[in-house]
Structure formats: C-alpha cells, structure tokens
Picture 1: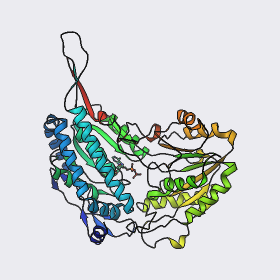
Picture 2 (picture 1 turned 45 degrees about the vertical axis):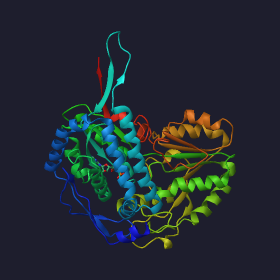
Picture 3 (picture 1 turned 135 degrees about the vertical axis):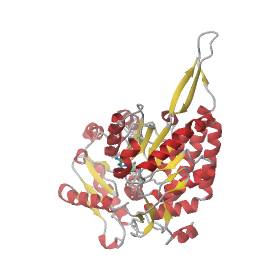
Picture 4 (picture 1 turned 90 degrees about the vertical axis):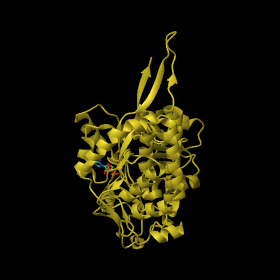
Length: 487
Ligand code: ADP
C-alpha cells in the first residue's frame, strides 16, 4: 500500500464520460482536497452523448437481462476479484481524490467487494429461475423477476467507490443497463471502477459512465424518456428535486430509491460506561472527518454524568490528529471542498453565538493548504435547534434530566430524519423500549454508530433520510426489478 500511495503521488488520472467503452474528453480539473493539487480531469457530458448512451443501453438491455442471474453473477464476482487484485491502487486513488484516510480507503474497497459478491448471490438466488407460486389445479403459476430497463445511478463523493459500486452492481445484477453518474468531486475513482467492470465482462453497451455536475447534466440525464428507475444517494434536497423531475417527465412511472442525510443522535444515560462512550463518540462523530451519512451529530447526555463525560471527551479530542490522509497517524483528513469548508465555518460562527464551545481545535495545528476543518464540540440547548445536517467533524451536545427522556425521544423523531441512532445504557429493557419508539433505520446499542456490514447490518433510513430499501440488505435488489407472472 505504501508503494501504491507513493507511486500515485504526482500522477493524474482521467475521469470523463465513458460511453460504449470509449472515453470522452476530460477538461475540468479534479483536485486533491488535502493539498489543492490537480489529480486528474473530468467533464460535463454533453446532452448528445447522454442520448447516445441511453440509446445504446436500451438497445442491449434485453440481452443482458436474458442471460439470467447466474451468468450476471459470475461477471459480478469477477468484478470483486479485480477490485481485490487492485486494492492498493484503488485505496491510493480514494485517498488522493476524496481525501479519505488509508484505513477508510481499505474499508471502502472491502465494502465495494462485499456489495459485488452479495448482489451476485442475490442475482443467482432470485433472478435465475422463476418462483413457483400456488395456482389453480392443473395450471402452472410462476413469478419471474427481470430488469426494468435503463437505470440511472447517482452517487455522492463521501464513499466514492463503495456507494458508486453498490448502486451500479445492484442495478446490473437485477438485469438493468446502467447510466452511472458519480459526484463531480470524485469521477476518477468511478472511471477506474467502470474500467475494471468492463474488464470483468460487463458489456460496454450496458454500463456507461456519465460525468458532470448535477446542475449541468441532471436535466438531460433525468428527463430522458428511457429512464426506467433512479438510485440516488446524496442530500435530501436533491432527492426531492429529482423526485419532482421524475414525476413531471414523459415516459413510464419510475421508482426512485433514495438514501439521503441524517440528524443522528446518541442518548447516553447515567448507567453508561464513560470510557466506552468516549471511544464510541469519537469514532461516531469524527471518523472520516464526520463525512459519513451515519455520523453522530447530537450527543444527548444525562445531566448527572455530563461534566465528567464531557471532560473525558475533551481530553480525547485533544489527541485527534488532523492532517495528510495518506499518513497512518492521521485520524481526520480534509473535508471534501471549499464549499463544505465554508458551510462548516459558517456553522461554527453561528454556534459561537447560539451554543457554548466545549472543544475547539487548535487552529495553529491546521495544515496550511487543503480544505481542513478541525473537530469541534459545542453544547446547545435543544436538539431541534439544528435545522439541517451539518456534514463534518462537528459534534453538538445536549444535556437532559432523567425525567426528560420521553421528550428527548419525541424531539429526535421531530427532526424528521431517520437514519442512525445510538444508545448507551445498561438499564434492563431500556434499549428494547426505545428501539420501538425511535424512527431510525439503523440503531446501535452500547457501541459506536459506525459500520454497515453488507448482508449483516444493511444501511438506510426513513423519512427525510430516504426511501429504503436498505443497501446491502435482502430486499434491495427487488426494487430494481419488474415482476411478471405466467399462469
Ligand atoms: P452532497 O451535498 O453530498 O454533494 P448532492 O445531493 O448535491 O449531495 O450530490 C449527490 C449527487 O447528486 C452528486 O452526484 C451530484 O452531482 C448529484 N446531483 C446534484 N444535483 C443534481 C440534480 N439536480 N440532478 C441530478 N443529480 C444531481
């Protein structure tokens, strides 16, 4: 890995559109958020090329569907093999393009591999032969699953390989052709992933890479009459915008599978183990520079343990190393770009007025170049003071009294989001009781709020946090499919 990271230094990659296997022009710079250096080029795919990709995808999708789940699964397993063979190169790219730490990069490639193998198995299990259903005597009755057509997969920059791969591979496994649209900040790793997918045997006419900003290419991409479904991960606002756009366009009624943001809360009561809580809070709030959808944003601590716990937390924050994500000692790398940094800086100013700072990163330790934001902890009066997701290493703390627990739960649900939730408590029965009342997709009890394990602990939320079904879960593939019966 060290060699791959060193070899990647100074190298630039190309991440423009790939239509029918042919790479298009790439003339917009992509920068490394840790240094500001140009690491490659991308492009806004023009409308004519988008149309060409749709036409090609639609023409070949039926053949891809017809080869069946088993044949598709064998190719997807090959994608996983190729990712494993190229893990060092992929980690180095993730680190340079997205500013993710090496540990994050390694976990991310593993997650991408897990997605490939899990959806391959799903294709084998559910898309190879029809399910026989009970029917009237003398009649056979079968239910088959097939691809819907051309699926558009729109992914974010925060897991530039894992989420991109998960969406694309699920759509392919179910028998769809795919228009893959990575985030404009991270098109290079996506282009490399598409190359490896083609090398593994996914037909070039079935998988096209459509690069560009949402503003430049969102409309031609989503207005196209060939769109048969959309998988989206990103902000709640964009998901709503896409939903409206899909509803208004010509063509079929299509599903939107949306995974969006969260306003994630952890409750810590007086029976929690403070050392464990501190470790888990640090991981949950600051790992990946707080740029995980699952990251802890609001810590609710029972008043009787709050002073002690917050002192310990402050001590742990002082140990956090902000810096070069390609160095093993780094805990927190940069945030993705200037826009993200600006939003965090404005939020810090707001919190200086509306909250009480418990920990502020020592600015003299902030790297001189790159978009770095040091971890912050502020105490606020009310969970519902935060109206939007704050995407970065920024933790808010709210104290509560024992008798206010019900009200805390009510306010958590009142955020309208429903992604992750954490609880630290050793009171018998409390976890079960709260679990029933909290509207959140992933609840973590007496542990950190990190880790969605494909096939084990699938990830996704409800309400403002998304439509479900969960990525990496047993129901995900079905949403990409049409059902047909033969009686
Ligand atoms: P984030 O705040 O995480 O960057 P966005 O929702 O802006 O979230 O972006 C997530 C993905 O959605 C990116 O690939 C982005 O380019 C894409 N996107 C943004 N706006 C649109 C749009 N209007 N139409 C289609 N895709 C969009």
